[in-house]
Length: 250
Image 1 (spheres, rainbow, N blue to C red):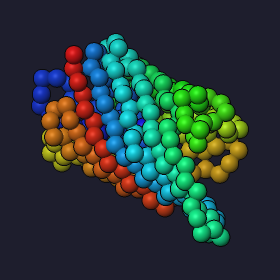
Image 2 (image 1 turned 90 degrees about the vertical axis):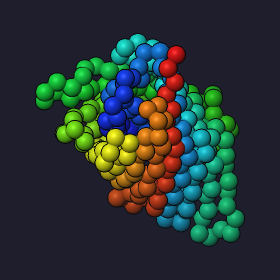
Image 3 (image 1 turned 90 degrees about the horizontal axis):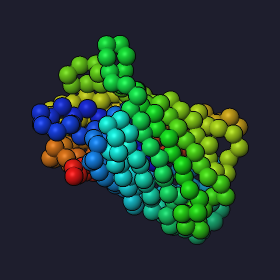
């Protein structure tokens, strides 16, 4: 999982730090040309489906974002995951661990906000199966894309949303995805957000979730975050996440 824009309105010479974590909504803006942004953390989710309980801990959710051009960034991500599955009729857990497929992608900033027109970006990813550990290696390549939008509501608040689709490696058909996030800056350093998001698969039931969290800007180039959430539809019992974003200029 790669997560969202939150507005941080610190007064500084360099561009404000805008991240794609901690939530599911991606920002339409790109990393400044020549800058490297590291976004990483840990994530825990708990799912229950009839007799099966699945607890997943992602110890490393690292996403690297490099500003190649003024309106283009390259993206590289890799996760280390431990998954514990237990059926209600069984006494022992089945444990799987290893690397998930490598994420390779790009983001293009299409336009900046102007009047009623929002900031708009386009993001696309490939998930390469041959880079994954045996426990998480799919047969086919996964693909996703999304358009990202952002509207400024006031000096301290904004609303962002994504619309797109994804094709999972071992699933039939597409799943259409949406996100909607509201961000509010209490101070130049401290921000809050709340979000709705989900997917609508062509050949399965839809899934809808919510989460909320906080961000804290320690330095102009370093931000911490924490998130809690769960599902609206049946499935996810709990989501917990914490991490950081760090930007390096050449």
